[in-house]
Amino acid sequence: RADLAMAEAEPIRPLEVEYEPSTGLPPEYCEYLPEDQFLKALPWLSKNRSLEWLQENCAKYKSIFETQDNLEEKLKNLSVSSKEKGGKDEPKLLPGGKLKKKSKLEIVMERSIRNKRKCITTISGLDLFGIKLSEAAKMLGKKFACGCSVVKDAAGKDQIDIQGDFQYEIAELIMSKYKEKDIQEEHFIALEKGRKSKLF
Image (tube, rainbow, N blue to C red; front, side):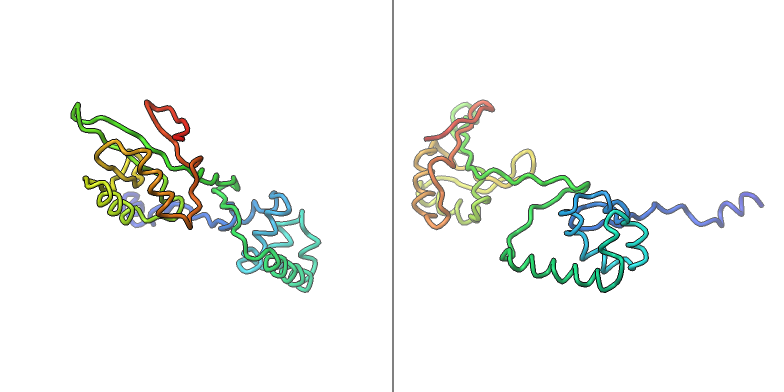
């Protein structure tokens, strides 16, 4: 009977934790956020939690939740404030509220010798400037009349491999072809034996 009872018992399911999306924290921990981050979480909290829950679990900011009118007034002010900022993108936060670092705008050129004699120039970072790698690879292959393709590096990120040693020529072509991207000489980095240095 004991075995039968165990067989009939419901399987243990993992606990599902809900996270407030802008901060990456469970709602009950939002009270401990600095005020600026708490206010970013406020629209979601007010939509997904009752006023009574907010009064009980966000005591640090109790003045906001004294009445429904207070809460609505605060939300209204937040909405006006965000419009005045012109809809600028907020920095992305990782789970736990840590600021996600922006990728540094640089185009890395690496020259390597394969099969003891074939030289390959690898270009990474064009996508950070909004350049489509497939289009750039096609343009480069046609310009230098050689093999050129989009490949993935060890981390799974897309980059361009072109046969031949064309670091400076490629940089000059990219700057002239994509003038609207405002790519400057200082954006180009030469990578050799794991060390980075300015290409120009």
